[in-house]
Image 1 (cartoon, each protein chain N blue to C red):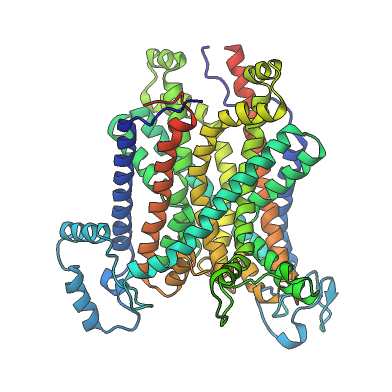
Image 2: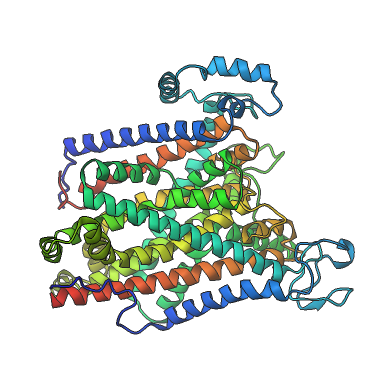
Length: 332
Length: 293
């Protein structure tokens, strides 16, 4: 099979659009901070700061200067990666986010990949074998999609942490519900990784299961539509066996819509990870954002918002760039 | 065709079993959330003798003989509180998504009809808002404004109109090119009447489906915010803050988290099934229309 290269002009256009979009998001966060009730400077100082502190910050941030100057300053700072100082942590927002980002990316990317692998497999099985199995899997996937992640998370903790230990199940089934590492344990190398994996099982399975539910529903519908199509009949008439039929003919046609679905799934994964990180006390960006809202730590809240926007925009850009590979009929 | 074809969500084609069950569930739930709190013998918000009445087992009576379907940690009736919470959730879900749908329909219609700068503005505003996960926008909204019912509904509307605006815009652009529109224009029908009488009704079908699916989404978002402590504030009950309230009772009294979560899932499931059924029916109607014309 021959894949076509992505035309450079289309890629360039997509990149320009992504940059413009990010600029709009920065503008939006700037506008939201200014639109919020109350004085921006008093939003940006730690609670309990004196009036003199507020006045000093106002001069320091240039909030007494014209709006256009403020905006240019905000843009320059944000683009340079300088997002202010966290009140709660007394550190640069950039550093606070840099600590949390790998955790969220690890959780998000692992779950996304797993949810597509599982979702595609389940959806194809459903389409190939109609009947009772299909009906049961449909119910499961619909319920998964309709259930709030945090509620499923609490259920998983109740089963695999509390009940599993009170029924003294084997250690492999008794999973930790909090954090990414056993507190106090001084582990290295393989053991440390194994500990991380143990802590990751519940959050990753939960996020992947929810994602896989949506993917499976989509793949099932598309596969059922395709089964009746002329090109599938032709392929079958030519004597292609089931595996080749599904892998070579059906999946090849689903590649482009699945890529689009992938870009669409990123915001959902972000939202899911906010809840999953909160429930399982994973120190990622989602939990950081919620904690910062509660603590009224606005620079961090805005930093997290920009980070999430960047993830969605990059995912969209990636999907767009890969589209000509996924479907050679789409060119330029 | 001289007359615009029926947009037809409700027209023709008999309803499926799932659709009837979903509709019945939603109607039953709507009736229950209105009626049950009115019939309650004790104030579902008042806390008095906590130690004597905390965590009454399901289907048991407390020391004053008040029967509880489910008891909570403060001796209040969880079921009545759940129904009270349902009032809020259904209100937020329906109002949030219907207002968002109206805003989205108007903006989408304006964009598709006028084109040019209006179209570019609306489309790019939608693109920017879609670049942020909706939950994140909601979180920013409640961070900058006071958490509460009004904030949640306003932010739900502000972050929920884009999908419908895109749908309606696409429909309006395709309908605008059809012969009955030029025929109506040739008959001297003015632009506003043309838009509201002939174009928008044709775009309403997909918008109605999206709104129905949006109700479940809005309910999930509201309960999520309340779960995080950033939405409806206790003592006012919401399914989200009730689930959060049962977090530490998972083993002792699992029903405290389980029951409101189940109510939430059933509600969202019902709106999803209903929306899907209407979409299928709409798709069926469309293909019939396409075959006839």
